[in-house]
Image: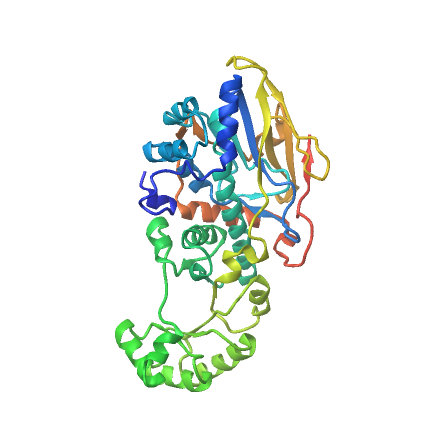
Length: 442
């Protein structure tokens, strides 16, 4: 496995240290106490959606599978743990041969989810499963938050394409993951070349204000860009005076000019004026791209504007106000003993304060109404009711430690579009509200 595929620097040999200290101390105590080999079931879920959100988006599953496969304690990692005295020698010996050999079930990436949805289920010995908690949550919480924001923006944009432009507004590795999640949520391109290289996402970009300022005048800047990139390029027209810049842009590139980009001002007003000016100059096919701190609300406000595409950065890579999904990884069942044939016993945290959990290995299905529209997320234990048997959501992702399949990102993206389209129409409303369908436990 090339670590570049994980969005990691090439000198990082594994994902094993993408974890919390206490995962390893729990392992040590469980090994010493004799409970480490007990068969266990962990589930990833969220108790509630971020405030005002109507649905969540499962994103990052493909990265989770890569992280599990690359979770190895090599000599350098073991040396670090030994030097810091994180765990004792018997535990280090156990870690040296660690390979996840269990099973993982989960919602297919791109699917939507709701409060209580068992988004991911990890099964195996307590020892092998507990170590994966932090890295799984790190990936799913981040990527699902970005994908949910992207999905809302895509709904607001309608058929107009969205460009992900957030690399400079977040950590350099998070930027690559954010671009991938944005593509899942409905964005069409990215400005981040690392994301294009690692995940095959189409990349776009032309120039910034610095390029215009470099030249003695705006005409020289436009001419240099057109000479280099062709008449189909996108010229940035708000460095000085927008009206004059549009006139120069068409004069230099002709009516074949690909697009103009507006990055400041009253975008609604400026877009109308620019469209009128372009049409009067004969550049009727020249597109208008707007950027400038857009979020889903700003995009929705431009629905009636003559805008052809949106570029989004800061608000996207920060989850548009919700940078995490508050997903948790909880033990929901464990065997009565280390005997492989010992029955599973449901377990759950029962504390007060809104952090209770429901024990037991769960299934999930989505019930549809007479029109084929989702009406409830149904979660239960034991046998699945016959009427829901063909609506089950969990699929097998890992069996015996082996990843069963990796999906092309376009398949995941199309799945999300279909899942969102299968929700009630109110799911795409930007007004605050509760989850668009209820979660029912049976």
